[in-house]
Length: 219
Image (cartoon, rainbow, N blue to C red; front, side, top):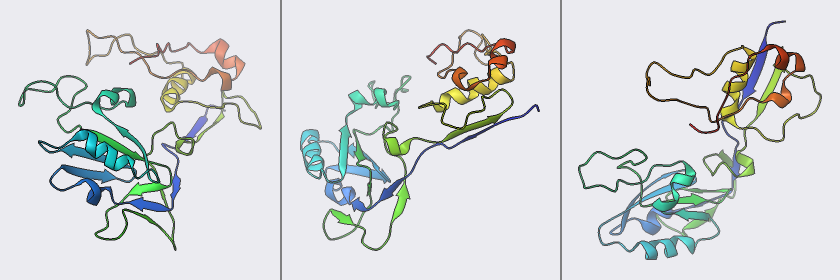
């Protein structure tokens, strides 16, 4: 009678049926490259022509979804390469490990090296699942289930979409907790929430009884 339970996943999964050897395509005298499933991080060497590398990569449209440059990183929530003199401490939002190019594969494809053969190959006899694609891809959506005290009893889906950042504010609301105006570690800075309270799935008596946390929409 006093318990509410939330079950959440952190990401979805995509079935993989092909792979691209972007390392062999790009690496060498022009760049250093590391991959993580559907992501490739490219650090260009001195004298390398960025435009030529982008053109070479985009030619493999069967596997490549997007090629991002540092000017587009912030909208993805990623740090950019440092802009100050070498050796100077990176500014907020910058990181010395940020790549010169970020390549994202299409759903169904991953970046995986192979010493020979075509740059894009298909998996014939087996399948694997993978994640790491851009979160706006529908197959990357996660699962959120809630039940118990304070949550509406509904036999059908109550939300069409919710953000993972809204789970903590909703649980805090059910507990009657407020978001602190100040935190001990940041006495001079007001910290606000990214998420929101999922009031459309809460029972009406909770709305009348609980003190609401007040997310502001930005961190």
